Amino acid sequence: MTYFYNVDYDEVFGNDSGENERDQALREYFVDLPEFRKFFSDKNELGIVRARKGMGKSAMLKVLSLRRKEQAPDDLVILTTGNELMGMGDFTGKSQAYLENHWKQVICKRICIEIGRRINVAFTDLEMSMVEAAELEGFKNLNLLSALTERAGGMLQKALAAAGGANVLEATKKRGVVNPEQALKNFQDKGERTVWILIDDIDAKYVDDDDNQQRVGAFFSALRSLAFNVSGLRLRASVRTDVWRNLRKMEDQDKIRQYLIDISWRDDALRSIFTKKILSYLKREQFPLALKWDEASNYYDIFDQIFYGKFNWSKQVVEPFIPLKFLAGGRPRWMGQLAKMAGVKAGTQRISEANIYAAMQEFGQEKISDIQKEHSHQFMALDKLIQSFRGGKREYNKYQVQKLIKEKFEDKVVEVPPVNGFPYKDVEQLVEFLFEIDFLVAHRPGKPDFVTYNSDPDLFSTEENHQNKIMWTVHSSYRNFLRIE
Picture 1 (tube, rainbow, N blue to C red):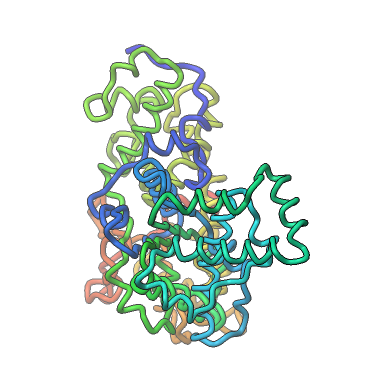
Picture 2: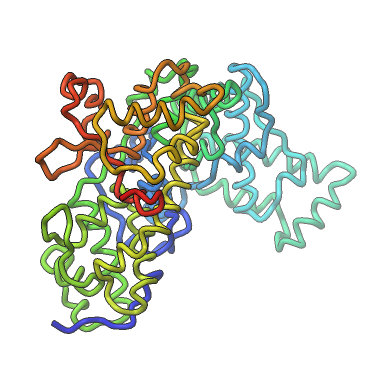
């Protein structure tokens, strides 16, 4: 076998964030699952993708944006973030009714700004106000884009006719628009088109308090109302699984649930993502064999260009994908991060088993930082809870792990904060929470496989566990950093 040398692992595994990945690279390695169809379909007014961090929510929204621009170039496709939208309005300490209407207005304001960008006129310079909630109700039988461009045209005419009109016209000329009214008319004449609003990271700064509960809950209620009461609009958004679960004050949650899809990568799909990334890199580098290879038929050949041989794992000799997936918790982003960190240890050579383990100190530290950011809104003292395991054993039965947490955490804090929004009652809550966030995984004595929360969420409350027949193991990716033997 001829091998590729001088590997650039940053180039192989790409950007850690899907929204910042190169368009062509994302097209090449993105893997479609059957459950994604309704999210991508233009027949569905509303779609929400739910997953943990690092599972590909942002990548899905970016891929949808790229596909819509290719398939329907006249449509207006807006890829934005929750932070951008929140910066366009006032969402602090308001009632649910106000917040829902305000979200609708802000979303329409964002569309108006995009119309201005398309014709090179900044409508914000014309003090273009947001569409009133009552006005939105009149858009049900009108195409939204046509209605908003007509409204923009009226505002533009008034601005040009007013005393400051000359200044407005001069400003548009500086942007290369000689006749802004004609530019808007040309934009309008393309007919009734669909507006796609793709909103990522609405929960980027979420903490579990009343303000955030109201704000994020009202956002999803506004999406549902807009999607089915305004013509020519398609809405897509992302949300973290843990945040969705904590939206206890959201009145419409049961009605919106049917528009949710969950990202859950099976092994074959994760393999495909990684194989496509490697093969795409080898082709860019003009590696001769790669030009003939096929992802499905040459899987082992492709992996062998990056990873050196088989790895020892759980008393077995396995392909490198197995430990890589487990150590990264099955999250594509974390798998890429671990591979790049191991690549630093490998230099320009293939990644060996020793390189993976040499990267675990740094990777474990990064992962602990990530889960604290992701889950601290569910339990504010997560950092201290995790540190209670430092220097301890790797495996405990139920009684032992509860004893550890009681002595090293509960007895040392003044007051244990709520868990998942519910008042603290006992140590069992904390063990189950650590299982839920994959800090602990379950293990049946004598069997090689580990059980995660996603694969069996009710395991902790079973009689099998109450009888101490389940062992609770600190996830192997954290052990090196926490000095757990």
